[in-house]
Structures are given as C-alpha cells and as structure tokens.
Image 1 (cartoon, rainbow, N blue to C red):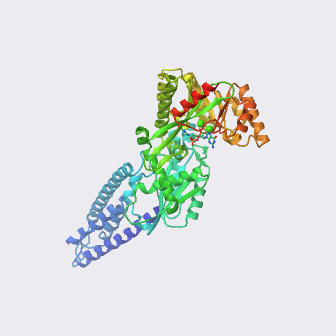
Image 2: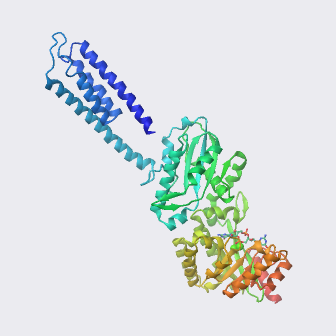
Image 3: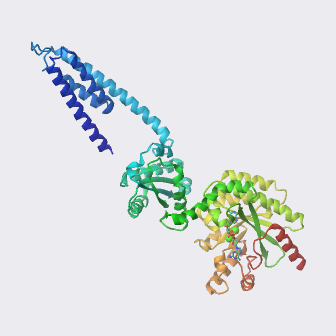
Length: 536
Ligand code: C2E
Ligand code: CA
Ligand code: CA
C-alpha cells in the first residue's frame, strides 16, 4: 500500500518538475526574470505542497529557485545577469511558500485523520467500525462479493483470565494480521469491539480464503509475551455487488452461519439459498424480549419422584408459543439467547414464574420444590446475581424449595469462579444441582471438587443402563460415590419400567423421565400430585 503511495508521489514530483522546467523555458523565451512569468513558478510549488506534502514542496521550491536562479538573465536582450541576493532571495521566498503549503497540507491531513479515526474506527483502536462501509467503494470487487463473519469463541475466558486491554490488543493484532496477510485487499471491520470480525472481499475461490484464514487464525498469538489460544468459526455468503453501499444487515446471515458452524463443530458454513430459510429462523431471536413480556413464553413442569418417599420435586422447562412460528422448543432458542445478555432477562423471568408456582402449589396443599435451568452466563453476571438474590430473599417461603440446575459443562469451564458463585447461592438457602452429569468429559474425580446438593445423571447413561453392563456399573459407581460425598442423585430421561426398577435398585434417590411424567402445565401437575398423594 505504502509503496503504491510513494510511486504515485514520485510521478507527481516528476511531472511538477517538468512543469517548472516549462515555466523556466517560458521565462527565458519571454525575455528573462524581469517579466511577470517568473511568478508562474508558485503554481507547481503550491501544487506540490498539497499533493506531495512538505518535503516535496521544499525540494521543488529549491529546484524552481535554481532553475530561474543563477543562470537565468534578468533581461535576455541585454544578457544582464542576476545578482546573487536577487535569485537567492527569490529561492527563499519559494521555499517559504512551499513550506507553508506543505505545512497547511500536513495540518489538514492530520485533522482529517483525527476525524476519520473517531468516525470510522472504534475508540482507541485501529480497527474500523461499520461506518467504514458507507465510504468504501466496493465496485473494485466486481459484480459479486464474498462477505464473511469471523467469530472468535473463547473471548470471555480470555477477558476473565487477562483483562479487557489485553483482549483489545489481541483483537488489534488479529486485525493487523488479517489485513497484512490476506490477498486481494479485503475490507475488514468489527461491528463492536467484540468477538466478531466482518470482511468484504472479491468473488474468488472460497477454499483458498478458508485456507488463508486458517493459517492466520490458527497460529499461536503472543500478547505481552503471553501465548493466547482461541477457537473460531466462519460464516460466508456470496452476494450481488450492486455497487451500492453495503450495510450491516448483510452480515446477519453470515453471523448466524458462523454460530451454526461452531455448534455443528464445522470450520465454516456457507449461506446458500437452500439453508438461508433455516437461518432466518434465528431472527426469531429479536422477538424474545417481547415474547417474555407478552406471555408468549410459558413453563411446563416435569416431576422428579423420590424412590423412597412421597416427596415431589419439579423441573421448570420453558416453552415459546410464537404467534407465527408456532411452538418453539427450548433447544431452538436457548443456545442463541445464551449468547446475549437477554439470557439474564429470560432466567429472571423463569425464576419469577417458579416462585409464583411454588406459592400456587403450596396454596393447593402440595409442598413442591421447583428447579430451573441456569446458564453459565447468568452465573457470571453481577446484575443477574443481584436481582436473583433479591427475588429469592423476598420470595416469602423457605428458599430451599428453589433449585438451580447448572450444567456440568458450564460448571467445568470456569471451575473456580463457579465454585465461588455456588457458595454464594447456597448461602441464600437455595439448592444446587449439577445437570447433565456425564455428558461432558469430566472425570468422576470432579465430583469431589463440588459442593452441591444434587447430581443429575445424564440421559445418555440411562438410555443404556438396562442393556449395557459397563454403563450400569458406571451409574452404580457414580451413585455410590455421590452418596459418599453427600449428594443426592437424580436419574433423568427414564422411559421404561425396567430402567426405573434398576435405578431404584442402584439407589438413585430421584427418577425423572417420560416413564414418570412428561413435562406438563402446572394445573395438570397439581392433579397428578394429588392423585399420587391419595394413592400412597
Ligand atoms: P435439560 O435441562 O436436560 O432438560 C431435560 C430435557 O429432556 C427436557 O427437554 C425434557 O422434556 C426432556 N426429557 C425429560 N424426560 C425425558 C425422557 O424420558 N425422554 C426424553 N427423550 N426426553 C426427556 P426440553 O424441555 O426440550 O428442554 C431441553 C433443554 O433446554 C433442557 O435440557 C435445558 O437445557 C434447556 N432448557 C429448558 N428450559 C430452560 C430454561 O428455562 N432455561 C434454560 N437456560 N434452559 C432451559
Ligand atoms: Ca435441567
Ligand atoms: Ca439434564
């Protein structure tokens, strides 16, 4: 880029020098410096000041001063020569004019740079923001452009481990590497200072770009001599370049594609007409806040029955009745909501409902405790913890009836921090369960590090407990170890009588699954609970 600018400046200087030579010839042919044409020399000098800058203007001023200096007569007819101080003084005036225009140009450029920096770049960073799209000429890329979203995944971990400045430096380093190493000069920017980069490049071989990006993003980065690793995924889409300015909305689908790639453990997803429709479903996300307020979301409750007492515990499971899309299962929106702060609103909404429903059951003679699923993002949000604590402290009944289910993978990822948060939550009097235990990769020794009330064994084990001897042994061993450590065990996803009987024999404390009951509305659960109490 720089060499391009320099060669452009050299060409301008050559042309302006020729201009000065032409003026010199004119001065000579029209009778010498006595006549007015010598003043024309200001023109190339001023042009050099504005087009090449300070140094160019001074150099041209000296050349021009010399050209119509010592060898140029005052009057060609008499061949009267100039005195030294005549031409030298003129040369000095040229140099002053050159310097002043060069300086004015420099100040102008500098101010433009400051304005550009605040308009087109993120604060304190050298990474462009989306405003850059409105001033970029995309016509150089031809009739089709490739748009790309680069999603960096473990950013929260990097911020937690180091700090925001460190993270900003990492982003800047990645940006510089992309900018310098990618062929074909793509336009790279960030929507916010976050985990996302956007890129616009020419319509070219996708595979080659994927390889280039992999080379850049998979290498080990060192920031302040510290090695940093990060995971990433990519979303691509080819769009028609109608030579109009691109705007931020064109990246919606590549953002989703990059998320999908991550969820599906793929390097990238290319948005095509065929899969775009599916991606559009994700735009439903924008409706979730409204949905929480407009009673489009509701809770179902699934019992966890004790294998030895009458005790009834319930798990609250969210549902979303979308006015256009119909009933949306939680797995279609929770993972996406979890990527945003909206998960705090969602979980707080569930907690409020759970508190209401515990009161509803109690006022109908059923002392049920209810668990809710809490996402890892919630646990590390001070705002969430503050509001949740307030709701729990003012619920009006013993908070032991409220239980938070935290997935094993979430708890594992930030072990130390999770431990601290769990301690605080248990102090409030609520119960804590580790959900989906065994689904992740943690070893049983992880159990010894916890300080919780319940372990929920993942359906993955229960599915094969009656047919796979090894799985049955693992379940038995986990139950025994949990008991030794003072945890109660819930087995989830129990679908048959055989499974139920075997798990009871293996001393599971609670059973949850379709065999006992599917998730149901609170009213149905009340009837079910009353029947059960009457039977015993
Ligand atoms: P989860 O917490 O592991 O919940 C258990 C899921 O298994 C529920 O699916 C439940 O309906 C289903 N299930 C229960 N028993 C059986 C069975 O015997 N057989 C089979 N095949 N499935 C059974 P659901 O309601 O679709 O929820 C899926 C996941 O969505 C939940 O998994 C949980 O991770 C998440 N989720 C649901 N509600 C919420 C919520 O309010 N907040 C958050 N953060 N996540 C939620
Ligand atoms: Ca759960
Ligand atoms: Ca579970």
